[in-house]
Length: 138
Image: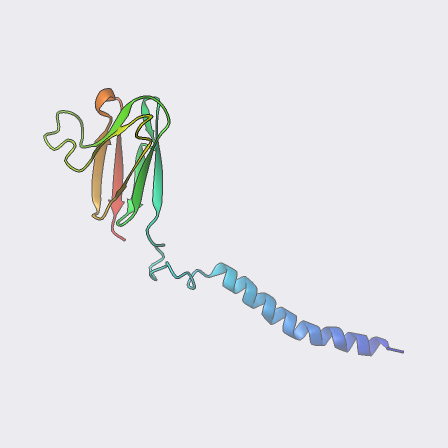
């Protein structure tokens, strides 16, 4: 028959390996150094940001992304464009992109490889339908 001291020894022996294993599991869960897409500066690799095009707005209207990220505009309703530039009076309007957004063209994607501010608008609905993509260095 087991006595109290024998059972206590078994539990203590189990506790010797349980505590370090639990600590290791908790530490691994809190660390992202093992993430293969982490370049070591805390920035995860390229991602895709979705902007909804509906009614008379881009949502979100101001997106902040990193170099190499992709923006995906998704049509929800109406007939719109996503056109680079500050408006129709901008002499460079549409130089970077000019994409209709409607039932036949339900999505459009663009990779932003350079940092900077990239204003854009909807040609039929400007000046009320404007937005901006802010791209930061990775």
